[in-house]
Structures are given as C-alpha cells and as structure tokens.
View: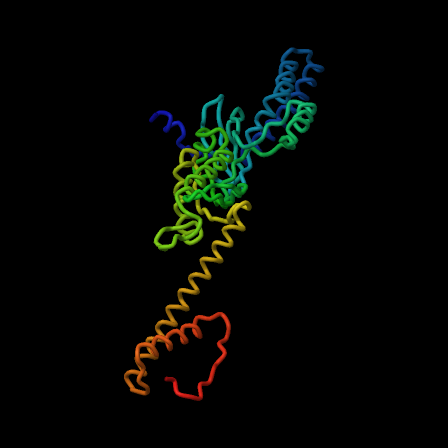
Length: 336
C-alpha cells in the first residue's frame, strides 16, 4: 500500500529551455540539408562513397530524428499542467508556464479526454441505439487544467429524515491539487467527482428533515443550509482525496418538495403559520384582559363580581381575537 501511494506522489519536472532547443533543432535541420547538398556535390566531383554516406545521413535525419526532436517541445499556459509518462512509467508533471523541451518519447496523459469512435458508422449506431450524441474527439489537448472549476450536477430526488421526497441540487467549486493522483489514482477524475458528489449528497440529506420540527431544536435542510453545506463539503473532500482534488466550496442551489407532495406540504405550512399566528393573538389578548382587570381593581373605578368579570373577559376576548371588527352596543341602563 505504501508503494502504491509513493507511486502517486507528484513529481515536478523542470524542462530544458524551449527556445534554446528550438534554435538547436533548426541548426541541425540546416546542417542536415547542407550535408545532403555537400555530399551529392562531393560524389559528383570525386565519385567517392564518402559523399553518398554523408548525404544519406542527412536524408535519414530529416526523415525521422528531426521531427522527433521537435515533438519534445511543449508550451504550457498559466493554469495548466502536463502529466508525462515514459513507456508506461510516470516521470513527472510540467506545471510552470512557458516553453520547454522534454524527452520526445514521453507521452502526455489526460483520462478526461474522450476517445473518438472507431468509425463514423460506430458513432451513428450509438446515436440510433441510445438516442445520445456520441462523444467524438476533436483533438482536445492532453493538458490538465489547474484552474478553479464548478460542477453542477442534475437535481436529485431524495427522501429526507422523515421520508418526505425532496428535490435538491448543489454546486461544487473544485480544482486539481495533485495531478499524479488525479491521473493515476482514478479512472476519470471528473466522472469520479460527479459520482461522489451525488453519493455524498444522498447520505447527507437523509440525516436532516426538510423543515424545522415543532420544538425548533433540530437542524433542517431549509433552516441550517449553510452549516449543512459545510458538512457536505467536508464529506465530498474526504471521498475525493484519493483523486488529488481540492473542494473549495459546496452550496445548495435548489431545495423544494417533490411535485407529488408539494401541494400538501404547502397546505401544512399554511396551517402551521395560521396556528402560530392565532397562538400569538390569544397570548396577547389574555395579557390585555389581565391588565384591564388589574387596572380596574387597583384604581377602583368599578366593582365587578365574578359573573361580570367573566362576561367582561368573554366580550374582550371576542373583540381582540375575532377575525372581523366588533359591533359596539351602547347600554343606556344599569349593567346590573
């Protein structure tokens, strides 16, 4: 296991200066052309085999080694990296931007580059049988982007802690931190990240209810979205560490009940809001009635027996808690 982990450790390559090697390559090409010309002229004048040998060497160099030499020239832009292997063995990663020369036999590796179908008929067959557009390579670069990227997977239907189906979507901001692990640790680090994000989202959502419970002490997806997003970020980071990826942020972008229960849940929320409002009105009315009786008793404005107090309380509660405005009735006689 330790040997496998050591194999995935990133090695930073320092390539030779590209401009210098390009200049040397051009000089060698001109030298080969001069050798061909000089060799033929020497053979024509002296009829010696030495001139033919010199010309053949120049021709052979122009046919293969010259172009192989130029294949070792690599251009790295800012925010890019090039993972190189030599006959199947990882040799290192070019991360510094610039113009470099590396071993021409080294091969760049990027598992996210899609392979082209073997033929046009294969692509047509895939389109007809699956109904999906086939992925055809268009000469995409083998360089790996080190820039910060955003992953937006499709919204998922997941059951929350109470078993209610909800629709939720997340956006994950990420970047490649270790190119060796990203290339050799997993088959395709982009697909791996997408799958792990969906899996972590399902495992996290099942731990919380959609809305706050009646006691209000339990965390919920709607009420504690920021804290849950932080937990989700840590869970995704733990899962993709083997792929050399860094999760910078995870945010919940969409949260709603599934369509089949959305109407019922809306009625439930409205009923809960009405009940809470009624509780507040009743509590306020009781306090006002209590204050009125206390003031009347303290200032001895009027003496009320228990029956009249009960009638007064009833009238005040109706006035304060009623949905409609109360109609006043003027009593011109005695209240007794």
